[in-house]
Amino acid sequence: MLRAAFITRQVPHGTSLARETQDAILATSALTEDLSVFFIGDGVYQLVSKQKPQGIACRDFAPTFGMFELYDIENVYVCADSLLERGISDVELIIDAERLPQSEINQRIRQHAIILNF
Amino acid sequence: MLHIFKSSPFSRNTFIDSLAYLDDGDVVLFIQDAVVITASHHKYAKILQDLMPKVTFYTLTEDLDARGLKSILGQQVSYPEFVNLTVSNSQIQTWN
Amino acid sequence: MSQPVTIAVLVTGPAYGSQDALSAYHYVKSAIELGHTIQRVFFYNDGVLNGSTLTSPAADEFDLYNAWLILAREHRFDLDICSGAALRRGVIDQSEAGKAGKSHFNLELPFQLTGLGQLAASIVTADRVIQF
Figure 1 (cartoon, rainbow over the protein chains, first blue to last red):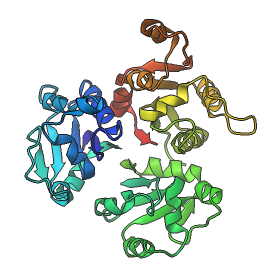
Figure 2 (figure 1 turned 180 degrees about the vertical axis):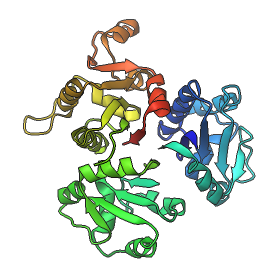
Figure 3 (figure 1 turned 30 degrees about the vertical axis):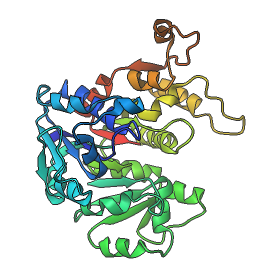
Figure 4 (figure 1 turned 90 degrees about the vertical axis):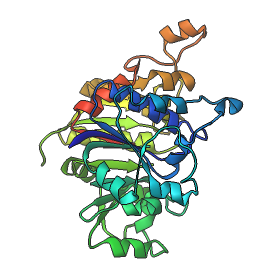
């Protein structure tokens, strides 16, 4: 059983949830490598590359996803079905997260003791 | 796995979008505005009924009472039983 | 009656405006009554607003700020307010107010500004982390 799963489901910038979830993930990675991150539903939009939130006075936190590897956050997954449903399967993503079908995402989430869903 | 839902399915699609994440043997607890989902016959009631053999549904009594409602699908539980559900189910997620 | 467990509670909603903080409060109260240990209540996202000393409900309405104080003091659990999330939302203690050049502050003990490390600690060590 892995320790912590972070499920992130919001489009970035319209609310602070996506950015603050990333902060929580980074803080947790300092204490354990035993964690996974799942981008599902609207959360897949957080990985769209070439975001320019400065124009709306929001923080550009997407580049920090590129630091995940440095922080030993290796289990990073994006829901292929969510991408398809939103018509963005061919859009360039900011990191090379493993694309999994929803059913597989569900099973991997269940391998974790603590699950936070934002 | 215990899933906690908070919003009305008529206002937010959280519950409907998360149906694919409910597995056999899972437990669902409706709190806050989500309690409306078990309080009457409506377009989502059939979805719950179809799931009921494999998923157990609970609705928080205090939130139903607050809204003048009673559950007609699944069981009602109070806060102490809510706590017990979070103790007996080792995996829990709250769907925003 | 189940074995007592250690529970951390994550609150993401304000004292007033959504029910999250109230649900969390009632949950914490019940958990304590059933003999479980509350490791901490961690306030994040809009939940940091629970820490504002300026919260002033009407006399005939529930005073959640006070309720948290009483419960936390009696049962000795921390009320951790995420510092970054709090400052961005105008919840600030005396020390940070001084640094930021603000003439007022609105956060006092037992609520305290902490880093996300406290949330991480609970994620790593608590038996349960309940998110509201």
